[in-house]
Length: 188
Ligand SMILES: [Zn+2]
Picture 1: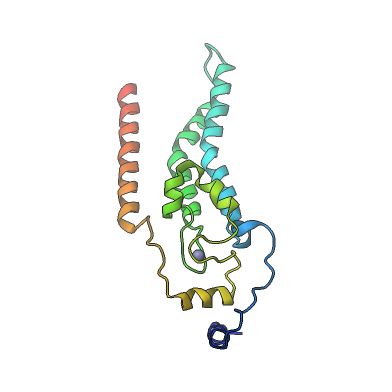
Picture 2 (picture 1 turned 90 degrees about the horizontal axis):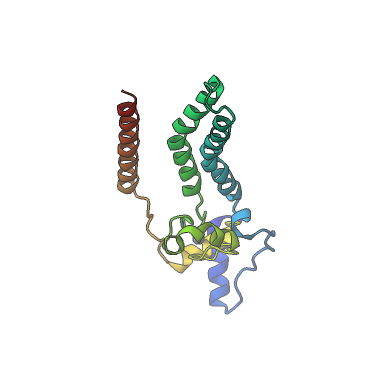
């Protein structure tokens, strides 16, 4: 059944005073799992924390060699930890930013409600049973899409516009440049 067929069926039922097209039983797991985005949130957590883990191992390692010249692998570990901070932060951000409703396009990690909840937003996303804007259960069924189109509602504007992303990247680049300049300045 195509999207148009579903919309026609919806219209026919609405005119005839019949109940809407029944939605197929939803598989368990909340909106995040049903929409297939759950692995992105999990992966972003591990990617985001990986430089911290590297630096933690370096920190413990350095303590194991007090007063002695630390081995080369420890220095490499520190360099890897420092250099991977920005790329992993960008990767984690991109993964989280791609968590969006396939029906109305709502970006769950940066929508108005998520911005209000700040640090608790991913806990909120994990407890969602349906998209807070269009009501899709995550399956993005044709009936759900047709219902959203028929409702005539508009999607929430994307928060991370091109200008905002560009501004954030420039601020990050300036901070990294300032940090490296400071470190080189100390060594000189
Ligand atoms: Zn939606």
